[in-house]
Image (cartoon, rainbow, N blue to C red; front, top):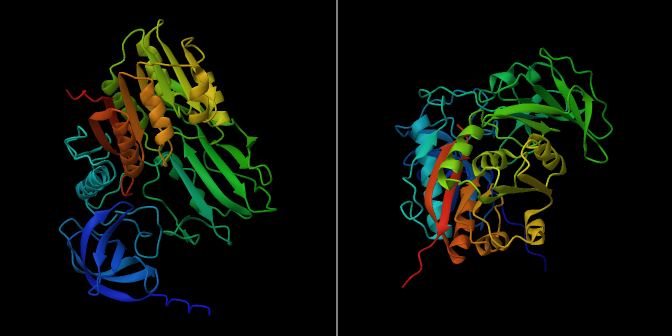
Length: 442
């Protein structure tokens, strides 16, 4: 006998008191019956009416939006963006919170993840518990820093550019994204139609005037003639091979950071905040304190940012090995660091390439893994190389905490950690942890 489908609770409303912040841009609340709610557009301590957006009877938790604020927090402001709010654009999580409150909330999330997944207090992680703003991002309540140098727009069936709604394929057409950097906004992506196009990624390089648009056509769609207000190169994602093809202009942009110019091709990865690359290099180098003659690894090295900074500090008698899984990024890294004979770049996955190198010991390690983290296998291998210090750059506090737990099992502990608000108005936070071998117990 087939079980009856459970009743959907989408649209149901509850009056609740909002509890602590949770990872992912929401807060936790409970109904009078004890049902757990993950609530967006709320702040801790508020009394609100929520409307369920996802979930059914008997579910472990429900997702909901705060649709009426009965008792607001002192940290609440009116969301500056006209496209923000329940059921609207899902790009920003904390437009309704003062800038200082946003950083406090992110700090609470990092602390909670460290304790829950690694058993570490902030003090044990060498962290003072603060999330530092990027230079130039200190704004008054109700203001929004325009920081995002790479924005991917979705295009609706009418050819209008917009952004995805939270946890949805639905599109919110917009006329302007407030967190987009000026170089992105000046391209005017939202002001024109994009027939037969699925997505438009706009890139405004830092330190150069390079602008790029990467187009993904709909199946069978043709590229429109791109006429934008500024000089721009155009790339196309192939429908069959999913490779990036040059339409016109350069296939790369030139970014400027750490005293060098970096080629980043085919819409490849680069930090989206204009201050992020310099800020992270500074934090990593201050933590590692490289010496002349050191042997260093830069894992998940992208286009070579940390490898270049390390190479300049370890000198002619030192050596740096970078490993990068993206073919084009590895090619760019070799190009970017061609003047540094002491740098070698290998293309492939870290867990596959590193054991084949024959390296048995290193002095320093930088790893900047993707959002999922490095994982136990890679962490264990790195610890076996007995580096003096390890710098872990993390864009996700949960992945960082999991990997710190693995490092702890392998004999390495964080001595210093910093957290940076490189994604204002969103729930994302960047961390840099410096690890050393734990002192042996007598």
